[in-house]
Length: 76
Image (cartoon, rainbow, N blue to C red; front, side, top):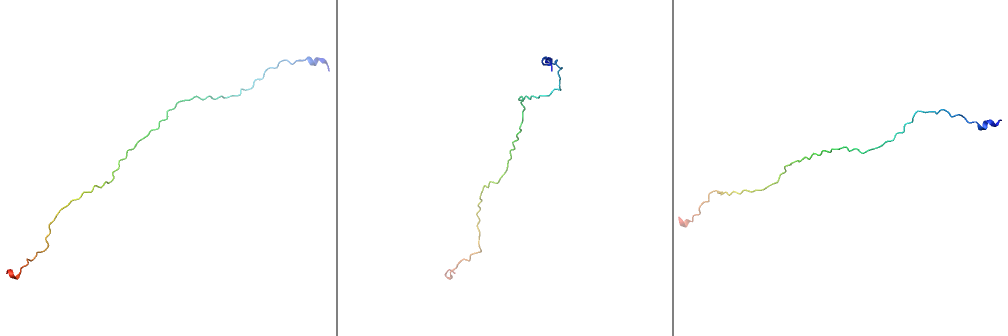
C-alpha cells in the first residue's frame, strides 16, 4: 500500500434534497362566541274552591189541627 491514499480527500458531493416533511404547529387563540339561552316564563293561573259558608234563616208558624175548647158542664 502506498502512502498516497492517506492524504486523499474526496471531493464535496452534491447535496441530496429530500421532499419536505411537514411539521405542523397548532396555535389556539380565544374567540368569543355568544351563546344565547332563551328562558320562557309561563304563569299559570288556577282556580280552586274556597268555601264561604252563609246561612239563611226563615221562620214559619204551623198550626196543627183544631183544638176543641174545653167546656165544663157547669158553664152550659
